[in-house]
Image: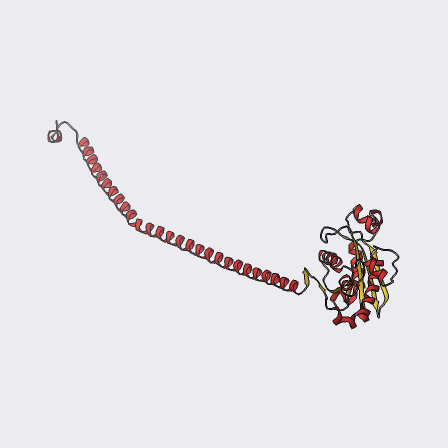
Length: 305
């Protein structure tokens, strides 16, 4: 056993050196572990320190979202308010206009003026005041229809005669295919059949020609006369309205005038008045023939005024 073995025992120097190295290695390893833990703690601490930053970012994001949502809500509320105001204003204006139209309609009816959409007809009752005008010029008018309702029935024949200085100078007459069948009850009165109307011109052909014939009577300058005129004018107004024809017609009723100026007859129907004034009638209850007789009656009535 050499001196080294005595000093260190049976283990060799190589073992001791190895052991020393292992001990050093373990120390270094522990130090490294401590350093790793320290680094980890530092990193974790860094992360904790960054939390407020993250929270700040989150707060900023939330704040931005809130602002945007508020802006959108404000914009929506503002837009809705503006639209609501606009709608209310429009409704108020429309109501005012409609009320004005209704009031005007009532006022016109009170004055004997019957208003329709774009069409007005006014009966002149003080005929004596326009006697001179009528003596110079007027248009006698008559219709034949499918029935008595101005809106459900249709005019199937128009007749008009222009009188100047008490004489017939120009006439208009036409059957009208109004797209409605003629009931037997109407045919028994006017002798107009569905077969007769089958090849007759339709409304869109007849009425432009009729309006041209009326001339300034369509604007009320020339007066129109008819026997029991309210019946014919209701039908004419309803037809003009339906076809979109504007008119402002002034008329006189020869039936009303006959009741005023003629006495001693059983009635004041047109055939009776024609006989009274010695006016011949070739084709009763046909529009053009009836219009001619009506015009003759008007001439005789003017002589009685």
